[in-house]
Image 1: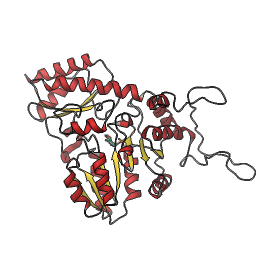
Image 2: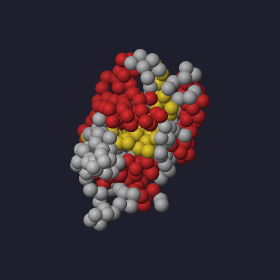
Image 3: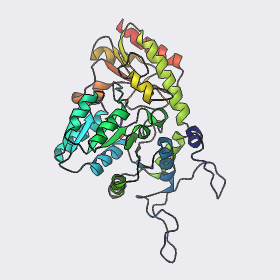
Image 4: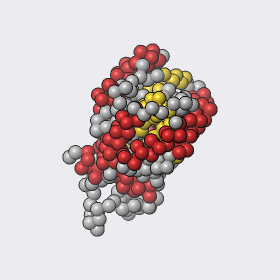
Length: 377
Ligand SMILES: Cc1ncc(COP(=O)(O)O)c(C=O)c1O
């Protein structure tokens, strides 16, 4: 069956007891055993396993063509668990410099505390990635498209380089979602999602996921750490996430089409210095995006307004329809001055506004940006 069908039907769910078409929420934290002390199902204790987590995990694994997937209590919980499970103290990590700033910050802190050698590189520069892997890292971590310039990393090429050095390649595919990029099919070993974003899509669940190409020792260590540290998603959140995922394809395809239309129009706007969107032929990563993304280029773009930070903040301040808030991938469009949100360590240009495109009318969205940009005239 096509991925759209599996997603819409939540893996063909029908409740055997009631005929219900929506999976129930299993709130039980513990599971009974029979007289011989055998478990009645595979579930034992909800920090390991719960049928309400398992369905969105299995659906995500199907969408990614993966051996398995596990949900976590946030994207950060998923990402930090992966690093802790895969990279022992004293080893080395090569990571893309362009990435979610919160994870970059954590990587710096964690690597310093654990004597892990961290090298941040421009992951679109394959020669730089190759050079950095000469010292044989345990892990190569990239994000694509990457915050907030939407650099596109060539997953196939970076996977080949990482594997030559016997490193694991993990890809944060939050922005693309499995609708637009299937990193495992391109050679990645592990995919990470902040499911808080496009996967859930309604700005009402904090969640993360790891997805693996193989059920190997590395995956066993990740599962063990989740079990030990307990960064699991609660059943109510897992149920909301599954509900959000059931409309994933229509949401992502619509938001991506709107984003492309807006990016194209904004490129010609006199108060916009530059639009950064992988779907535009002017974006440095466009050719790779065309080759490795399908069904659209994602809901995220950035505009560099003419001027500096105060001009960008004035434009955000004048928006009436775009909501001034951080995060992304929801049904409502958001505008944010990334440098303000990221703070002193930011790599974002001061005149950059990040836009997360939702499901509103693209005409209304453009008119809102046009009237907001008018403050610069
Ligand atoms: C690309 C990316 N990865 C990871 C994260 C962290 O996810 P969470 O906020 O769910 O912990 C974010 C959050 O903004 C993100 O944008």
